[in-house]
Each structure stands twice: as C-alpha cells, then as structure tokens.
Image (cartoon, rainbow, N blue to C red; front, side, top):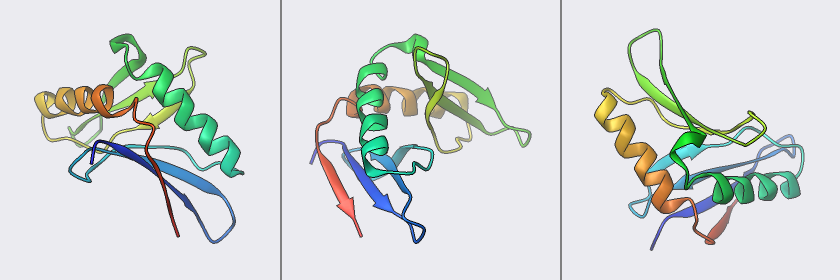
Length: 110
C-alpha cells in the first residue's frame, strides 16, 4: 500500500491525523482539531504543501535530535515529524513526506 493518512478521534471528540509511509511508519503528525472536517482540511493542506522543499522548516531539539515541521503558506504548522538521530535521517523523512503526502488514501481508526 502506498502512503496513507489515518484519522482518529480521541475520547473528547477531537480529531487528529498521521501520515504513514508505505511501510506503516508515522512520518508526520497533525495538531488536534475540534472536528473531523478540520482534520480533513489539514490533510488537504499537507497534500498542497508537501511537494515544495521551502515548506519544510528543520529544527534541532535541546537533546540534539533533529525534526521538521511542514508549514502552510500562512506560516502555520501543518504537521510535525518524529525525532531523528541524524540530519541525514531528517532529510530522508522530509523526502518521505514529499513522496507519501500527495496520497488520497485515508483510513479511519477507531
């Protein structure tokens, strides 16, 4: 299966999504949204912004780990990556988001 999105509703009725690579590994996490429709809009934003390198902001955490945020045109964070041990792994993570982000596959997890 190519990359896909998983949408999940929490106990409070709020919704979030993750983008998973074709191997099932989470490569991007969203914020928590008040509604499913807002989460779906977030997925649409990932699809629209993931193809351009300039939409990725790279960071180094206090512990030296590397991570990135996918940014919207308005400067808001659309999603955040996992922590990586090296800059090379961070770069591979961004490439995976570019590859898998355009996916139209969406799965609802209960």
